[in-house]
Length: 110
Length: 115
Image (cartoon, rainbow over the protein chains, first blue to last red):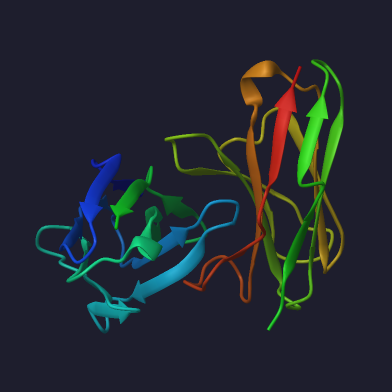
Protein backbone atom coordinates (compact mmCIF):
# COMPACT_ATOMS: atom_id res chain seq x y z
CA UNK A 1 0.00 0.00 0.00
CA UNK A 2 0.90 3.67 -0.01
CA UNK A 3 2.82 5.23 2.85
CA UNK A 4 4.43 8.54 3.76
CA UNK A 5 7.25 9.07 6.25
CA UNK A 6 8.14 12.32 7.96
CA UNK A 7 10.99 11.66 10.36
CA UNK A 8 11.20 15.13 11.85
CA UNK A 9 8.62 15.61 14.57
CA UNK A 10 9.65 19.20 15.20
CA UNK A 11 11.93 21.77 13.59
CA UNK A 12 12.97 24.93 15.44
CA UNK A 13 14.42 27.88 13.53
CA UNK A 14 15.02 31.59 13.85
CA UNK A 15 13.52 34.04 11.37
CA UNK A 16 15.30 34.22 8.00
CA UNK A 17 16.85 30.76 8.39
CA UNK A 18 16.53 28.09 5.71
CA UNK A 19 13.82 25.45 6.11
CA UNK A 20 14.08 21.84 5.01
CA UNK A 21 11.43 19.28 5.95
CA UNK A 22 12.07 15.72 4.91
CA UNK A 23 9.40 13.49 3.36
CA UNK A 24 9.75 10.10 1.71
CA UNK A 25 7.00 8.00 0.25
CA UNK A 26 6.24 4.51 -0.94
CA UNK A 27 3.76 3.67 -3.65
CA UNK A 28 3.23 1.24 -6.48
CA UNK A 29 1.46 3.74 -8.73
CA UNK A 30 1.82 7.29 -10.00
CA UNK A 31 0.84 9.42 -7.06
CA UNK A 32 0.10 13.07 -6.67
CA UNK A 33 1.93 14.61 -3.74
CA UNK A 34 0.83 17.49 -1.57
CA UNK A 35 2.04 19.58 1.30
CA UNK A 36 -0.68 20.76 3.65
CA UNK A 37 -0.18 23.30 6.45
CA UNK A 38 -2.18 23.45 9.66
CA UNK A 39 -2.24 26.55 11.84
CA UNK A 40 -3.42 26.35 15.47
CA UNK A 41 -7.18 25.96 15.82
CA UNK A 42 -7.70 25.37 12.11
CA UNK A 43 -7.98 22.42 9.77
CA UNK A 44 -5.18 21.62 7.33
CA UNK A 45 -5.09 23.67 4.13
CA UNK A 46 -3.33 23.05 0.84
CA UNK A 47 0.13 24.59 0.57
CA UNK A 48 1.24 23.07 -2.73
CA UNK A 49 0.60 20.14 -5.03
CA UNK A 50 2.84 18.28 -7.45
CA UNK A 51 1.97 15.66 -10.03
CA UNK A 52 4.15 13.33 -12.08
CA UNK A 53 3.64 15.72 -14.99
CA UNK A 54 5.21 18.82 -13.45
CA UNK A 55 7.60 17.45 -10.75
CA UNK A 56 7.89 20.72 -8.86
CA UNK A 57 5.51 22.96 -6.98
CA UNK A 58 5.83 26.26 -5.20
CA UNK A 59 3.63 28.55 -3.17
CA UNK A 60 4.15 31.45 -0.76
CA UNK A 61 7.93 31.00 -0.97
CA UNK A 62 7.80 27.25 -0.27
CA UNK A 63 9.07 24.75 -2.84
CA UNK A 64 8.90 20.99 -3.17
CA UNK A 65 10.30 18.70 -5.83
CA UNK A 66 9.03 15.23 -6.63
CA UNK A 67 12.03 12.91 -6.98
CA UNK A 68 10.98 9.48 -8.23
CA UNK A 69 14.52 8.15 -7.97
CA UNK A 70 14.83 8.71 -4.23
CA UNK A 71 11.03 8.66 -3.64
CA UNK A 72 11.33 11.93 -1.80
CA UNK A 73 9.23 15.09 -1.69
CA UNK A 74 11.06 17.46 0.60
CA UNK A 75 9.71 20.91 1.48
CA UNK A 76 12.04 23.92 1.43
CA UNK A 77 11.89 27.62 2.07
CA UNK A 78 14.84 29.99 1.77
CA UNK A 79 13.90 32.33 4.61
CA UNK A 80 11.24 31.53 7.20
CA UNK A 81 9.09 34.00 9.09
CA UNK A 82 7.48 33.70 12.49
CA UNK A 83 4.11 33.45 10.74
CA UNK A 84 5.24 30.17 9.13
CA UNK A 85 5.01 28.44 12.51
CA UNK A 86 2.57 25.59 11.96
CA UNK A 87 2.37 21.85 11.41
CA UNK A 88 3.28 20.67 7.90
CA UNK A 89 1.92 17.43 6.47
CA UNK A 90 3.27 15.54 3.49
CA UNK A 91 0.36 13.82 1.74
CA UNK A 92 0.10 11.23 -1.01
CA UNK A 93 -2.88 10.26 -3.13
CA UNK A 94 -3.04 7.22 -5.35
CA UNK A 95 -6.46 5.75 -5.78
CA UNK A 96 -9.10 6.74 -3.28
CA UNK A 97 -6.95 6.73 -0.18
CA UNK A 98 -5.33 9.98 0.84
CA UNK A 99 -2.36 9.13 3.07
CA UNK A 100 -1.04 11.70 5.52
CA UNK A 101 2.41 11.74 7.05
CA UNK A 102 2.66 12.18 10.81
CA UNK A 103 3.39 15.89 10.46
CA UNK A 104 6.33 18.17 11.27
CA UNK A 105 5.82 21.04 13.67
CA UNK A 106 7.76 24.15 12.68
CA UNK A 107 8.53 26.69 15.38
CA UNK A 108 10.06 29.98 14.21
CA UNK A 109 11.32 32.45 16.77
CA UNK A 110 11.68 36.17 15.99
CA UNK B 1 -15.39 30.39 -2.19
CA UNK B 2 -16.97 28.07 0.28
CA UNK B 3 -16.72 26.90 3.82
CA UNK B 4 -16.94 23.75 5.87
CA UNK B 5 -18.69 24.14 9.21
CA UNK B 6 -18.24 21.58 11.95
CA UNK B 7 -20.43 21.50 15.04
CA UNK B 8 -19.89 21.45 17.89
CA UNK B 9 -16.38 22.85 18.15
CA UNK B 10 -15.89 21.14 21.52
CA UNK B 11 -17.73 17.98 22.58
CA UNK B 12 -17.56 16.50 26.06
CA UNK B 13 -19.11 13.12 26.72
CA UNK B 14 -19.17 10.30 29.21
CA UNK B 15 -17.57 6.94 28.62
CA UNK B 16 -20.04 4.66 26.84
CA UNK B 17 -22.14 7.54 25.54
CA UNK B 18 -23.27 7.82 21.93
CA UNK B 19 -22.08 11.12 20.45
CA UNK B 20 -22.75 12.78 17.09
CA UNK B 21 -20.55 15.23 15.21
CA UNK B 22 -21.94 17.26 12.31
CA UNK B 23 -20.39 18.73 9.18
CA UNK B 24 -21.87 21.05 6.54
CA UNK B 25 -20.23 22.24 3.30
CA UNK B 26 -21.39 24.83 0.78
CA UNK B 27 -18.82 24.04 -1.92
CA UNK B 28 -21.30 21.70 -3.63
CA UNK B 29 -18.57 19.04 -3.47
CA UNK B 30 -19.43 15.43 -4.16
CA UNK B 31 -17.06 13.71 -1.75
CA UNK B 32 -16.86 14.20 1.99
CA UNK B 33 -14.55 12.68 4.58
CA UNK B 34 -14.14 12.23 8.31
CA UNK B 35 -10.61 12.08 9.70
CA UNK B 36 -9.38 11.58 13.21
CA UNK B 37 -6.30 13.54 14.30
CA UNK B 38 -4.29 12.29 17.25
CA UNK B 39 -1.32 14.23 18.50
CA UNK B 40 1.84 13.23 16.63
CA UNK B 41 0.05 10.66 14.46
CA UNK B 42 -1.19 12.56 11.45
CA UNK B 43 -4.71 12.09 10.13
CA UNK B 44 -6.47 8.76 9.80
CA UNK B 45 -9.52 8.20 7.64
CA UNK B 46 -12.66 7.03 9.42
CA UNK B 47 -15.34 7.22 6.71
CA UNK B 48 -15.85 8.87 3.37
CA UNK B 49 -18.81 9.33 1.05
CA UNK B 50 -18.69 9.94 -2.70
CA UNK B 51 -22.29 11.07 -3.02
CA UNK B 52 -25.54 11.43 -1.09
CA UNK B 53 -26.46 8.21 0.78
CA UNK B 54 -23.11 6.60 -0.04
CA UNK B 55 -20.79 5.43 2.76
CA UNK B 56 -17.32 3.90 2.52
CA UNK B 57 -15.24 2.68 5.44
CA UNK B 58 -11.75 4.00 6.01
CA UNK B 59 -8.96 2.49 8.07
CA UNK B 60 -10.45 3.48 11.43
CA UNK B 61 -14.19 2.87 11.04
CA UNK B 62 -14.68 0.46 13.95
CA UNK B 63 -16.64 2.13 16.72
CA UNK B 64 -18.06 4.79 14.39
CA UNK B 65 -21.11 5.20 12.16
CA UNK B 66 -21.65 7.84 9.50
CA UNK B 67 -24.59 9.30 7.62
CA UNK B 68 -24.83 11.31 4.37
CA UNK B 69 -28.51 12.17 3.96
CA UNK B 70 -27.83 15.29 1.91
CA UNK B 71 -25.03 16.27 -0.45
CA UNK B 72 -24.10 19.17 1.80
CA UNK B 73 -23.95 17.33 5.13
CA UNK B 74 -22.04 14.43 6.60
CA UNK B 75 -22.38 13.34 10.21
CA UNK B 76 -20.25 11.02 12.31
CA UNK B 77 -21.46 9.07 15.34
CA UNK B 78 -19.20 7.68 18.03
CA UNK B 79 -21.25 4.62 18.99
CA UNK B 80 -19.77 4.19 22.50
CA UNK B 81 -17.25 6.82 23.56
CA UNK B 82 -14.01 5.56 25.08
CA UNK B 83 -11.35 7.52 26.91
CA UNK B 84 -8.66 6.48 24.47
CA UNK B 85 -10.41 8.15 21.55
CA UNK B 86 -10.06 11.71 22.74
CA UNK B 87 -8.90 13.49 19.61
CA UNK B 88 -9.75 16.15 17.06
CA UNK B 89 -12.17 15.03 14.35
CA UNK B 90 -11.80 16.77 11.01
CA UNK B 91 -14.34 16.88 8.22
CA UNK B 92 -13.21 17.52 4.64
CA UNK B 93 -14.65 17.65 1.15
CA UNK B 94 -13.31 17.45 -2.39
CA UNK B 95 -14.74 18.29 -5.74
CA UNK B 96 -14.44 14.98 -7.56
CA UNK B 97 -14.50 11.31 -6.79
CA UNK B 98 -11.85 9.91 -4.53
CA UNK B 99 -9.87 8.41 -7.39
CA UNK B 100 -8.74 11.80 -8.54
CA UNK B 101 -6.03 13.84 -6.92
CA UNK B 102 -8.08 16.82 -5.92
CA UNK B 103 -7.58 19.17 -3.05
CA UNK B 104 -9.19 18.46 0.28
CA UNK B 105 -10.90 21.36 2.05
CA UNK B 106 -11.08 20.96 5.81
CA UNK B 107 -13.25 22.29 8.57
CA UNK B 108 -11.64 23.54 11.76
CA UNK B 109 -12.45 20.39 13.70
CA UNK B 110 -14.38 19.08 16.68
CA UNK B 111 -12.33 18.34 19.77
CA UNK B 112 -13.71 15.35 21.65
CA UNK B 113 -13.11 14.87 25.37
CA UNK B 114 -14.35 11.74 27.12
CA UNK B 115 -14.72 11.83 30.90
